[in-house]
Image (tube, rainbow, N blue to C red):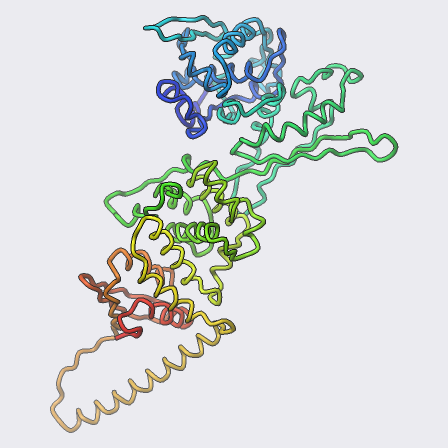
Length: 542
């Protein structure tokens, strides 16, 4: 069996161990595993606890990151780091006891499509203590079958070490359940706006076999009540998993006694970790990477997240900077307590729930979760798409709130927001705007026709003089509009236009000017005429 490639770990466990092991939740390292090590594994030896399972997975992940070919005979990891990876309340004595139990335990890998990858009676690990300059290190080595399985992976799934460790699991069978669900979650990939759920149905005997629950080998000895109790409590242990969200249902048979027929898990896949979305940024093109803006440290989001979000999520009509504005709107809605839609009360990343996510997960993860919700079921996006809701006013007020948080002046933005809100009159439809625009266009064309006829009359009366011909419309911008305001706000008003009506528009600001050739529909031009008024010196085009 030829191995074409070896999947790379996500996040560095080695660097965490060397510098700050307590940051395991923030870094969220992931390590790949072949199917043989995720399901169908049986053990012979002392009963293993959660911390025993966590220590074993950490050691394998650490060794694999050191060398993906698993060639070294021995490895070493800091005992203090290993202890912290297991959980904030773990002690060094707990780790040493776990290592001894792992030494006495034999594993069997029997669930494989490849006969050569089936092993029985494999020692889990051999370990010892080393003292290097007063630092306690754990030296360890693996049996060849474990190294063979890790160095060749025809298929694989990633284990989230922060969800498995860091004290997030309390039930002894939760690690085995999580590893099986992680393998099942690879049956499909998350797709924006699609059905991202995986439905798993187990009989009590099947689930007991997967997690090696007491009585799994004898149906008469299996306590189904305790198994169901474990299944219900396991949801709490799985709540830290980021790849999928888990729900569970117990299906009972009809009739007297209502015996348990099956235990059903539903995995709702989540969008990929934003740190794993690849970007190819040309830093010579400043507008390509200048996204987002400064904010209060509590709400600050890394600027490259918006481009990663634009690549991952499919929100109609939204480019990366639009996603940033959408985030500011959701943030201002949560901070002000003034709900814009019913989703304020029901969604996981809106209102008070959004602020709680910011405090527990960080602003970047909260923003990512909010955009994922909008991608799966647009709510705030649809609200801002309705011009009668004054979307430009809402976005401008959110931008003003951001600037207030960092101590910038906002008087101009507040005036602009009032102008936008005034123009978005309730009850006035797009048809009304289009009618006004077409009437103004007809009047302009009639005036141009009269002027052309008069020019011809004068041409017959005197020697013709060359007259400059131009279809340029000039907009003189208000003195408070900067180049950055123009790039971020004004260009976004027409950047997505597409139609047959061609215009050349020139913008003149303080210290800068710009010319754009724009093709748009009559309705788009009508909207633009209304929206641009808030940015002009006297409210009208020159």
